[in-house]
Image (cartoon, rainbow, N blue to C red):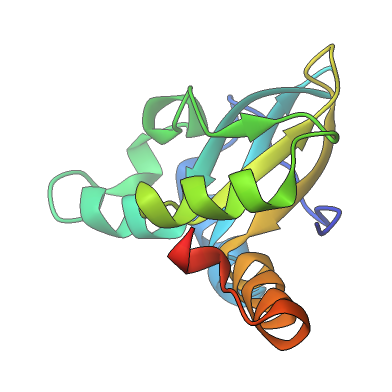
Length: 128
Protein backbone atom coordinates (compact mmCIF):
# COMPACT_ATOMS: atom_id res chain seq x y z
CA UNK A 1 0.00 0.00 0.00
CA UNK A 2 1.18 3.45 -0.84
CA UNK A 3 0.07 6.57 0.95
CA UNK A 4 -1.26 8.92 -1.70
CA UNK A 5 0.88 12.00 -2.15
CA UNK A 6 -2.01 13.71 -3.93
CA UNK A 7 -5.72 13.97 -3.37
CA UNK A 8 -8.27 16.14 -5.14
CA UNK A 9 -11.68 17.62 -4.41
CA UNK A 10 -14.86 17.04 -6.46
CA UNK A 11 -15.06 20.72 -7.42
CA UNK A 12 -11.48 20.88 -8.77
CA UNK A 13 -11.02 21.49 -12.48
CA UNK A 14 -10.66 18.24 -14.42
CA UNK A 15 -8.24 20.02 -16.77
CA UNK A 16 -5.96 21.13 -13.92
CA UNK A 17 -6.06 17.67 -12.34
CA UNK A 18 -5.28 15.99 -15.69
CA UNK A 19 -2.25 18.25 -16.12
CA UNK A 20 -1.11 17.50 -12.56
CA UNK A 21 -1.54 13.77 -13.14
CA UNK A 22 0.46 13.89 -16.39
CA UNK A 23 3.19 16.02 -14.82
CA UNK A 24 3.53 13.66 -11.84
CA UNK A 25 2.94 10.41 -13.75
CA UNK A 26 -0.14 9.48 -11.74
CA UNK A 27 -2.60 6.93 -13.07
CA UNK A 28 -5.29 7.66 -10.49
CA UNK A 29 -5.92 10.04 -7.62
CA UNK A 30 -8.36 9.67 -4.71
CA UNK A 31 -11.14 12.24 -4.47
CA UNK A 32 -11.81 13.32 -0.88
CA UNK A 33 -14.09 15.62 1.07
CA UNK A 34 -13.17 16.25 4.72
CA UNK A 35 -10.54 13.47 4.49
CA UNK A 36 -13.20 10.94 3.47
CA UNK A 37 -13.10 9.07 0.18
CA UNK A 38 -15.88 10.07 -2.21
CA UNK A 39 -14.38 8.79 -5.46
CA UNK A 40 -11.38 8.10 -7.64
CA UNK A 41 -10.27 9.85 -10.80
CA UNK A 42 -8.30 7.90 -13.39
CA UNK A 43 -6.16 9.41 -16.10
CA UNK A 44 -7.30 6.80 -18.64
CA UNK A 45 -10.92 7.82 -18.04
CA UNK A 46 -10.01 11.48 -18.54
CA UNK A 47 -8.29 10.60 -21.82
CA UNK A 48 -11.40 8.71 -22.98
CA UNK A 49 -13.63 11.67 -22.19
CA UNK A 50 -11.34 14.11 -24.03
CA UNK A 51 -12.57 12.58 -27.29
CA UNK A 52 -16.06 13.92 -26.58
CA UNK A 53 -15.76 16.88 -24.18
CA UNK A 54 -12.89 19.28 -23.55
CA UNK A 55 -11.76 18.80 -19.93
CA UNK A 56 -11.62 22.54 -19.16
CA UNK A 57 -15.43 22.50 -19.04
CA UNK A 58 -15.55 19.70 -16.45
CA UNK A 59 -15.09 19.33 -12.71
CA UNK A 60 -13.63 16.24 -11.07
CA UNK A 61 -17.14 15.30 -9.86
CA UNK A 62 -18.24 15.05 -13.50
CA UNK A 63 -15.69 12.35 -14.35
CA UNK A 64 -14.78 10.57 -11.12
CA UNK A 65 -15.70 7.00 -10.25
CA UNK A 66 -18.02 7.40 -7.26
CA UNK A 67 -17.73 3.73 -6.32
CA UNK A 68 -14.07 2.71 -6.44
CA UNK A 69 -12.98 -0.64 -5.04
CA UNK A 70 -12.33 0.21 -1.40
CA UNK A 71 -11.05 -2.11 1.30
CA UNK A 72 -10.35 -1.96 5.01
CA UNK A 73 -6.76 -2.33 6.26
CA UNK A 74 -7.50 -5.79 7.64
CA UNK A 75 -8.69 -7.13 4.26
CA UNK A 76 -6.41 -10.06 3.33
CA UNK A 77 -3.91 -9.04 0.67
CA UNK A 78 -4.54 -12.15 -1.39
CA UNK A 79 -8.25 -11.24 -1.63
CA UNK A 80 -7.36 -7.71 -2.79
CA UNK A 81 -4.91 -9.07 -5.37
CA UNK A 82 -7.45 -11.62 -6.68
CA UNK A 83 -10.17 -8.99 -6.95
CA UNK A 84 -7.87 -6.54 -8.77
CA UNK A 85 -6.91 -9.31 -11.18
CA UNK A 86 -10.39 -10.76 -11.65
CA UNK A 87 -12.07 -7.43 -12.40
CA UNK A 88 -9.04 -5.90 -14.15
CA UNK A 89 -8.89 -2.98 -11.75
CA UNK A 90 -6.02 -0.54 -11.49
CA UNK A 91 -6.11 -0.24 -7.72
CA UNK A 92 -7.89 -0.67 -4.42
CA UNK A 93 -8.36 2.32 -2.15
CA UNK A 94 -7.67 1.56 1.51
CA UNK A 95 -10.01 3.31 3.96
CA UNK A 96 -10.90 3.05 7.62
CA UNK A 97 -14.38 2.35 9.01
CA UNK A 98 -15.28 6.02 8.49
CA UNK A 99 -14.12 6.04 4.83
CA UNK A 100 -11.08 8.14 5.71
CA UNK A 101 -8.39 7.58 3.12
CA UNK A 102 -5.41 5.55 4.35
CA UNK A 103 -3.69 4.57 1.12
CA UNK A 104 -3.86 3.07 -2.34
CA UNK A 105 -2.99 -0.53 -3.24
CA UNK A 106 -2.02 -0.35 -6.90
CA UNK A 107 -1.75 -3.03 -9.55
CA UNK A 108 2.04 -2.57 -9.18
CA UNK A 109 1.65 -3.40 -5.47
CA UNK A 110 -0.35 -6.48 -6.47
CA UNK A 111 2.36 -7.57 -8.92
CA UNK A 112 4.99 -7.18 -6.20
CA UNK A 113 2.89 -9.24 -3.81
CA UNK A 114 2.40 -11.97 -6.43
CA UNK A 115 6.17 -12.17 -6.98
CA UNK A 116 6.77 -12.41 -3.25
CA UNK A 117 4.20 -15.20 -2.85
CA UNK A 118 5.67 -17.05 -5.82
CA UNK A 119 9.22 -16.81 -4.41
CA UNK A 120 8.25 -17.88 -0.92
CA UNK A 121 5.62 -20.54 -1.53
CA UNK A 122 5.62 -21.50 -5.16
CA UNK A 123 2.04 -20.29 -5.61
CA UNK A 124 1.10 -17.07 -7.28
CA UNK A 125 -1.81 -14.88 -6.28
CA UNK A 126 -2.94 -15.02 -9.90
CA UNK A 127 -3.50 -18.78 -9.69
CA UNK A 128 -5.80 -18.44 -6.71
